[in-house]
Length: 246
Image: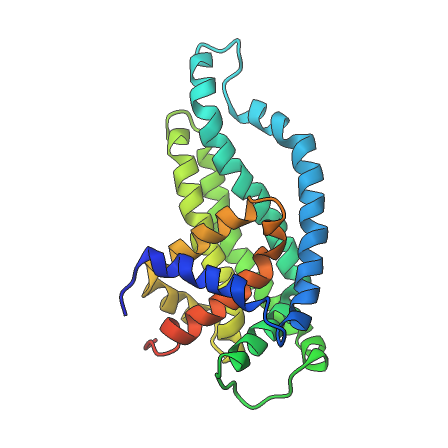
């Protein structure tokens, strides 16, 4: 199967459609509620702190580089918004992780897939809380080891011109890893194997994560971003990643 950006965006759109299906709506409720609460806090904090962050990273009006301020403002805004959104996405996923795994399981059943023999439902989701949290912490470690050096680039003159582009690409890649984990973990795949499979379909994964980044920036639609991403990643897994060799 071709490895194309259009497929990546398509998986997210299909995920958004799936979460409206009557058989899946009850399993969307908890991830959706978590997302609404977290993103509401994000909007409040973002409005309060955004201008200060821009002033900290951009040249001041008194600087000899002040002429660059209006040129760089849109670029830094595009980069800082995903940083803020991703921070809260990590928090939301940490809270909703076991229920996202349950949603991925139900989406796969809805699509006609089979999972390894195990009990399912809310009780199983509660039992999976500790493994799900550990998985989220492993992903957070992966994220921080790469995000911190990237963020340092924002304060290095000259290099900070390309930092927003690098950050956008990295955040798109990591969102694919973040949500791809839920269906793949249901089949017992460890993070290293998940990473390898997504690398084999890198363009599709980047487009999936990039489309999700854009969705997270759209008011109201961003509330549906988490469950739509889980459902879309499950379709991605079934149609492309499942049959790959490790």
